[in-house]
Image 1 (cartoon, rainbow, N blue to C red):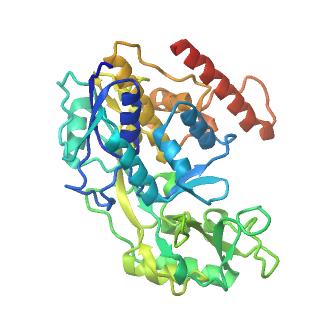
Image 2: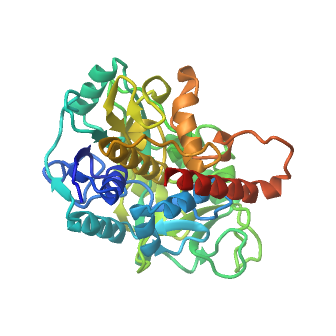
Image 3: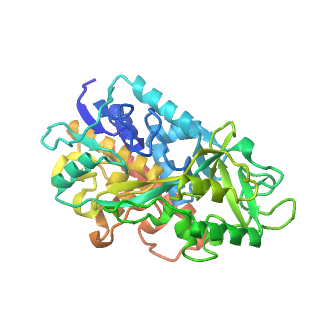
Length: 438
């Protein structure tokens, strides 16, 4: 088998998936990852594919947009989605993973592959003049020097907003006389733990959130958050009931002790298979560490909570994709360079991995003298590419996959049937597309 080299910068989700796809086509990969020589402010593990924020890859239902994206990726041989399935922890209809097991298994597979060489050193320059295809998958925490190199190459100022990370607590520190197991709408005990609030407790809690001390951004930093990952205190500032209609929504979480839904509820999702750690769902925050401990211990059942990890905020860097990217994820003015992951302008673990998959495939196909590929617009993969390349640049923002990115319906379809019909159209289009590729 002929081996040809591809350089991948970044050993996160997108970089690892890109590497795996490239070697499946017979190309040799040099994967550059700066850890453990250097860590970003949000990373702590030396493993590849470290999950920084939530341990959830969101819905697994194939009738949801993100569930359909996972199904497409399974069909195309995604390494990371396979390992996510293998390391899953109970999370209702969501696919959540034991993050340590997930990263360890990805690292083991990548390290063991004979066509992948891992180089543990920081890259500060893209190397635009190189004849070797380069996949830039440095993620939302792209270093300042690398971001500057990308800005010089594209002639565009990079965009940035801030992601916030939710805390993790120890299970043994929770008061199970108050907290109960229940997944929304499902009968019997569920996969989530629920901390129930009455009205008085809720009002006291949001008052504390509203006055809690937060970590200030630097003078040069522009406060711009992704709407799908707002800090809890930012949501609180939008109104008294905002949290009750958001991450603290009590609907469908009937307390077995009272026989009714609480006034509000905080849900805890299992962080590992052993069930010794739980993530506060939707509770990403920029509160200072002392304030997190003080305020979050006001949550019923968490009065003595021990925090395995406290929340924090981190920068997220991405390009204005509609102005810079081809549908193949190649830079328009430097086609030897491919962008993958969140840097390309998508948001979310699964979406980032998906862009790594397509970048890896296209870089390998180019090296092998084959035409680049673009998935059909009826697929979730194609819908994301459409968002990156066809959105008005003036209003471009990173996006999770959603059915609003798909082609408009040609005729009216009942709402309850739309997810299944989207799935049928996607898988049929994907099958025909693969047959054409040969």
